[in-house]
Amino acid sequence: MAAPDRKTFEAAASWYVQFQSQPPTAAERQAWQQWLNGDPSHQAAWNQMEQLQRSLGALPQDFTRRALSTTQQRRQVLKWMLVMGGTGYLGWNVQQHTSLGNVWADYRTSVGERRRIELADGTRIDLNTSTAMDVIFDGRQRLIRLREGEVLIHTGKLGGQTPFYVETRQGRVQALGTRFTVRQLPDSTRVGVLEDRVTVSPGDQPNYARLLGAGESADFDRQHVGLNHTYSGSQAAWVDGQLIVLDARLGDVIEDLARYRPGVLQCDLACARLRVSGTFRLDSTDAVLANLQATLPIQVKYFTRYWVSVKRIA
Image 1 (spheres, rainbow, N blue to C red):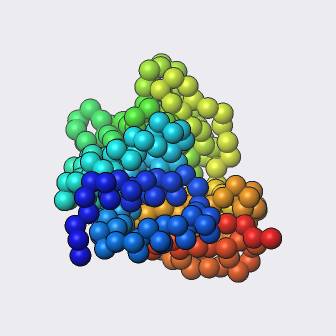
Image 2 (image 1 turned 120 degrees about the horizontal axis):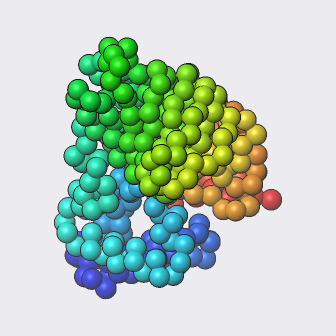
């Protein structure tokens, strides 16, 4: 098969960026297929694009949606793809350039993986999909540095009076003998308390601390802590490999499912507004999509194995 030149790879990347912005129409899909069949080098270039798609799970959550929000940013993504495509080490370079924390962290999980660890003080930590963290225990503090992803922490009793902290890009959470979750979002941190209490301190306002009790959650950035919301155990059901929703937007459900599979999973605005309830297995996202298609007026299309779009049907 002929090796693709830069122009051919640029064409493949352009198709990719175009379809990332919105699910392809029938005409666009046909045009893409004609281009793909037009020359053996086109297929070779697209194979490289699929290799990039398999590595997309290493990107920070919501990267694709945010990066494609403007024409200028789309050009940046295209430029990034061309650079990555020319390295010959696609998967490694995607990880290395976009999520170094996942490579060098003390503990990490890949896309769709969950893991439980127990620390020397008896603390139990569950790591959700695409999570990376460091553990720093010394005589002054017990510190978890969350680089990416989400954790559920049940603090141990063997640490005595040594304070227990979780540090994110936005600030710190101090545990007060508790069980709680911390999730690193693109521009904020989300904390949910299942037992006892925590205090939340924004990084640029360390003296402004918010106390959260059991059944409460809040998001915070480096300046502010947002409003308190209710928090239930069902929101941490990922620990048991479940996604539990009650009258949720389908768009939110699809976004959650996308965290647990490599590549791209997206839905159009028309079906995003549909409401859905149920308990879904996070290790069987294809089965979940099939079930949703059977019960809702939607169609699930597999553009490639790593590229799935959901559309509403009449």
